[in-house]
Image 1 (cartoon, rainbow, N blue to C red):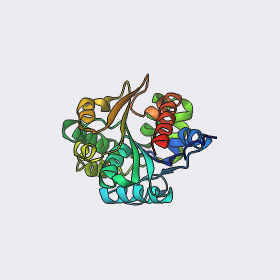
Image 2 (image 1 turned 90 degrees about the horizontal axis):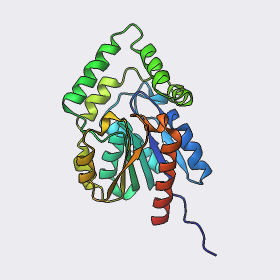
Image 3 (image 1 turned 135 degrees about the vertical axis):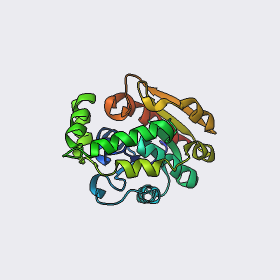
Image 4 (image 1 turned 90 degrees about the vertical axis):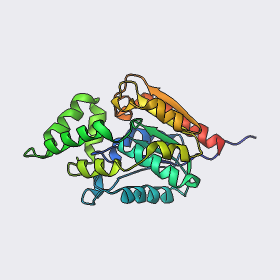
Amino acid sequence: METAPPRVPVLLVHGIRASATMWRVQEEALRTAGHPVLAIDLPGHGQRMQEPFTVRAALAAIDAGVAALGGRVLLVGLSLGGYYAVAYAAEHPDRVAGLIAAGCSAEPRGVLLEGYRLLARTIHRLPDRGLWLHESMARLLLPAAGARDVLAGGAALDVMDSGLRATATLTPLASLAAYPGPIWLVNGALDHFRLNERRFLAACRNGQVLMVPGATHLSSLAQPERFTAILLRIAERVSSAA
């Protein structure tokens, strides 16, 4: 009798100012499907809110998550987490069975990044450092359940400038080219971080673009059912290949 392949472990890496709690829906679905799964907090976020954010610290957090899952994973990162997932896969291809880089198909530098940093610094000067605005935008732009999930881990209000400054030193196109395994660029159809999508796809040795219909930047929260269906299909494919 033919047996099902072992389920690949899945490591989930959140976006900026969010935390591991944003992955609640995906964690539950993956566990139900039999996948070992772990969502981590990056430095400066969630339960690690007081830690400084640096490139090496972020990559070390991912490495610790990979080790906790047994040393070889399907690595999933969204937005900020996507850029660091890409960088980690390039450095440690033997530990990454497959890579999902969601909401990060734009070069993290130039006018886009500097404008984002300027806005972040301006918001941080508000009396509450932007807490009301952060919570209000989450409730306005996301379904109620998605807003609750992303806000459940707290708001990393002090990490924006250091996080963006560190991310500007990454080279995602070179990192995508360096990773030999399968890559899926998963983007919301309405995501402004699709700016360099074609260049990102061209950099991949074995890449594919998958669109989440109706989703904005935080596609896993804006369209959780559609994003999760894509994630489960990829996890099944990586499990079978392994």
